[in-house]
Length: 270
Ligand SMILES: NC(=O)c1ccc[n+]([C@@H]2O[C@H](COP(=O)([O-])OP(=O)(O)OC[C@H]3O[C@@H](n4cnc5c(N)ncnc54)[C@H](O)[C@@H]3O)[C@@H](O)[C@H]2O)c1
Image 1 (cartoon, rainbow, N blue to C red):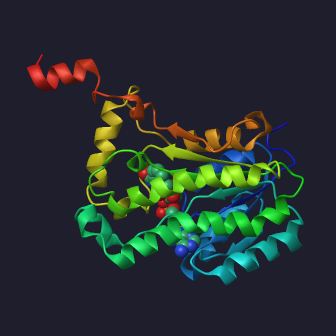
Image 2 (image 1 turned 45 degrees about the vertical axis):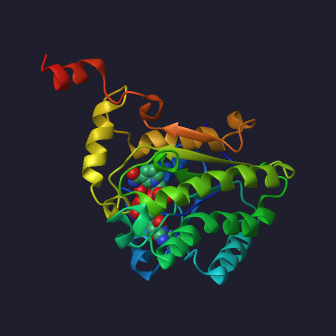
């Protein structure tokens, strides 16, 4: 029996099979959860419907998180389909492409607003509207963040600021929802080649560097994130809330970036 058997999970943020949310859906399905999905716009509808079928689900709802009415009707639709909800996966972020070109100093007022609205406020709004459906279910919410929240990652810019706000939001929401028995955590994933990632100028460099210098010397996969998400949304993680868990092959623990043998080679040609 899977460890998410009997749980109903709403997955946001699938654009295609490379999406981190796809890896999470795959792992949840394997562990016996019932799944429902959202898509951001008409362009993504048929793809997300196909993916939902792959996971035995016909529950697919439109939800552009910049629209309050979409979030409200999503809660109603989930309510009529299921009557309750155990898990919410928030795997959504956006900033206009120009914001990833220069530095933070070039951030436009509009770009800042959009990044914060789509990538941070959406977590608050979705949590609030879906909360009534989690009543008495010890619900679990997860969101996706990145190391650029903690340290400077060139070109990540306003998204780093948004991720720092997102991680803080997780802690505040954790406090708010604890009184209902629910939990919320963030997974800080290492770089993965997804649609969103390719908006970031120099992403391939970042990817290569991170892969080379992390203690395991390999890239993370959406399956790595999926398995951690299973744990966080299972009852085994019942005492974990407000946390940011790194799924990055240990990249964030390094002070000197690189394994000794590689640094020796690079610096001394040994
Ligand atoms: N790819 C990485 O390297 C990486 C690393 C750490 C964290 N993350 C985070 O993981 C999450 C998922 O991104 P991904 O890398 O899987 O890329 P992705 O492009 O596959 O997913 C991003 C999703 O956000 C959705 N989205 C954007 N604007 C939206 C809106 N207005 N309403 C509803 N949905 C909207 C898109 O439709 C898409 O499904 C994001 O929060 C991202 O910041 C990604």
